[in-house]
Length: 200
Image (cartoon, rainbow, N blue to C red; front, side, top):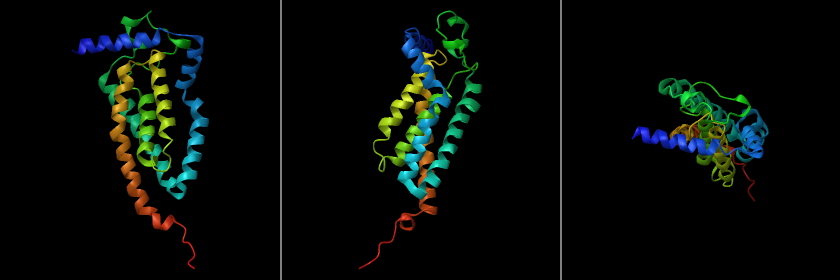
């Protein structure tokens, strides 16, 4: 069973990785680089502060907690435990992969911290901001899918390496969203943040 799953994983990897064009090379290399998303994160922060007001002082710091937890789960726990080589480090795939700019990543790939982090953020804001910003999920999930797919396209992750953290990110994001709800209710109750209108 595991052998068949590994074969399917490899076939899907090669399907994504071996159909390169200069356009998609540029787009997906760009999508995979963390620093290229800085303007996106800055715009997202501005939207959250503008929508949540004082509650953003609870919402935004918990994003940092969430990303730290997600990254440690992937890179600090699961990668050293699973010891699954990235396809870019797999001797059996040498010569079959198109490695853009010679990029190979670290030795182990299960699970993808890129995919885990972006999906954790997307789910967290789905749980916490869907009533105030119902359109935000339509931005965050395509963005997360693009980042996750870029890791497979570049040959540094198998499809299962990016699928597993998507599933793991749901309970993690939900747990932090409950922490936000508790903290916002404790320190910034609605009654305290709603302006008192003068009576007639």
